[in-house]
Length: 263
Image (cartoon, rainbow, N blue to C red; front, side, top):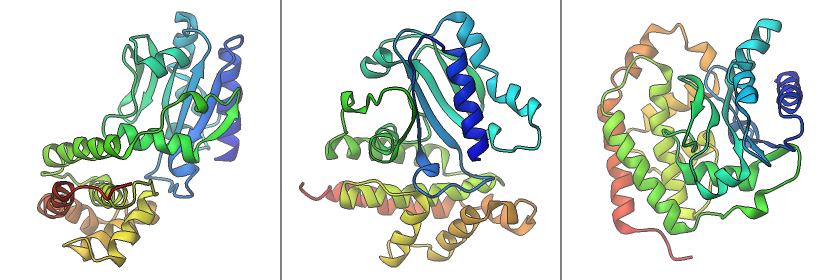
């Protein structure tokens, strides 16, 4: 992974020569919670000026380009994030940005952190746990979300849980809903951010999850996903998690109703 990060950094800087990019890692890699086969290598690249069409054309397929040159390194496909100007990131104004995600890569006019994560959570991860790989550290220009903004982020994620987590598939990622809920509960309780695995452990210790056995399964899968990829029973269980996810979602909904502790 270290080699992949070094090569990716070098190539992005080469393509964006003259743009003085600020390039960050954040998320599970910097929170000591990366697990190959589940986790992403989250990054953000902010430039002084808008990225040119020629630069975007070279950046969009860069993951695949590097994987072809080094097919034995599985980490290139794990990179996810965005590349856009600092001004567009701070103001939210429309601007063509390069986006790499689970579903593919493209140019988008309105970049934001991945819609299935919590925007404010990702921003706090960047501010508190992010690692500057290159360029000037521009994080002092960013606004740390307040507790109220984090609460609204949790509400948004609960809506995703209700909409998309009611019916799960055989993907191991279905277990992730339980860890997401644990993380939301931690934030509502503390106003802080914690890694997903640590959040699951935290919730188990406090007896917050109405299906603790399933949460333990989720933690086992996240800690060693490659051991479960061919496990038919685990995949069958993953496809039947909808009701349990919603039961745990009820705990989150009740916690939202009660409200966050006063700062």
